[in-house]
Image (tube, rainbow, N blue to C red; front, side, top):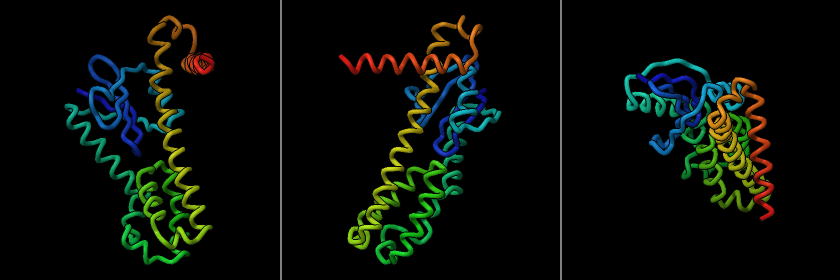
Length: 205
């Protein structure tokens, strides 16, 4: 029996309780993309990293992965993937006016990127960069380029913060006695400072 404890529905990252442990899993779902974590990592995921708490049981991994893939698809549809599908495919965009393109850029800025819908946002923006009317309009070109850079950085930032869920768990796993003396937020902050200090030291080598 597997229990889904929390999930980030926009990209399919999830905390799963097995008979032996709690795992943080992420697409593409494979053994190499599973990491054993502690209870506090689930709390951190929900309070700081955009996960939604839930408690749902699944008979096996196949059933769970099917659910997660379906959840990601539905979430992306609801949060803006349909923007790409509704009237502005790559072939249709070449006939759109500057005003129409500008409105869709507004939706990318206010809907897709804030909701974490990175893939549809990037596809739409890359398709726009190929358009002659965009390359010939300095204002549109600058806006598309800026939004694409923002989208890429937002994706990287989210992935980096999610990685902290794994790294912040390392210190409590190595030194379980610390978990009895300090709360999870103090441990996470200490671990973050250790990593930052180490990165400065390595930078000087």
